[in-house]
Image (cartoon, rainbow, N blue to C red):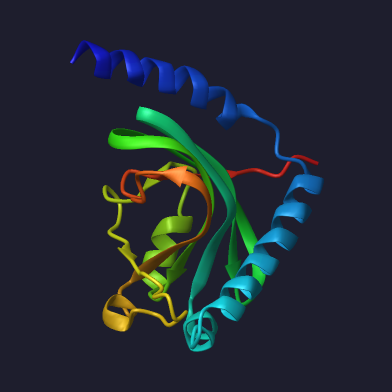
Amino acid sequence: MRMKSSFVVLCVAILAPLQALAFSQADAEALSKNATSTVAKFQGDVTDSGPLIHDAKGILVCPTITKGGFIAGLESGTCALQVEGKTVNYFRTSSAKFGLLAGIQSFSMMLVFNDQAALDKFRAGDRKFEVGADVSVAVISVGGSGKLDTTNIKKEIVGFVFGEKGLMADASIEGTTFKKLQVEE
């Protein structure tokens, strides 16, 4: 238990400064452009994803999330929320994890909101939003053929993790938090 509490203190010490980093207009423009190209790449790589993207109430696109650790780990990245193809909000994502994980990895993630109420809840206020505590996300796998696993495709929120680079023995998004960013002029 002592190791766990020490790790929590370490995570707060590392992640707290990330929350305070300035997010400039130039950062916002670059992230928005990167998010749009990430969605286009996803649609090119995943057969039949067009209707999913087209019918979505909103899509949270995290072009690059970096995760690293051994037994205990951290992940962090920035995300753009797009509604009807236009970026409407920016978020910082972070997570601290324990368990069977080892290595370092970067990947892209998308949360597709199929339900307006779920999207509105995600966008409400300035508080942190946590996957698992605030909402359940169905993580959808993409088969080797590039076809979607349509079993959970109509859930309120579906998540995709793709474009993995590196090696990490953990692929969950449970416990991931999202904090709305304010663009500084």
